[in-house]
Image (cartoon, rainbow, N blue to C red):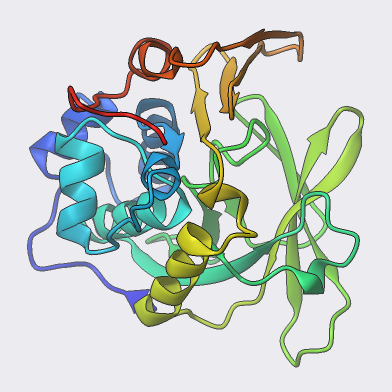
Length: 276
């Protein structure tokens, strides 16, 4: 799905406040970088709704109510649909893409296109940029990267590059790689054919309800910090990683998740919130 700037330019006040932005970002590369960094650091990645048997709504108004005014986080579709909407408000052109997560996959083609990423047209720039605020992982993009093959980019302390990979389709297959522990490792793969919101609705349903989907079975919560640190909760294992890769782990006891979610991750949860 390709979107264009709306008739009401500028960031809504609640979103700017949620991100901690004190000035209005411009429709330029600096503005895009500032928005992406701020979004990732302010709004955690979390899949608490699917774990509780709730399929997240992808209606922009519902996402805004949850992630912006409700103090919650979300997973890739929620984050990037929200970000796509806000980018168009500022004046960027956005094409919404479907991607296959290839981390740990022996055969990338075996993974469905359940992830979402954004191709952003930046006014004044000849090359579009890959932006993504919904990957969540410690090696995800903190800043957008230009759609250029075989060049390394460093953004906010993380190193990435885009490469082409062989596949059976007529369009080039792009793979986002991150420098992880001394090696380049694939994060996700995509082509440039636009996805529609109906495509993401099907992917969202699969991710939230399929018994084989990891997001339907156990909590995954991620948060990145301005100092380069990263916090991750997978099931009951809480992992804190600093900028240099040093890790500390702590097992959260049964019944102890809610204080971690509200305290360590800064999520706002209802008083009766509980995980099955």
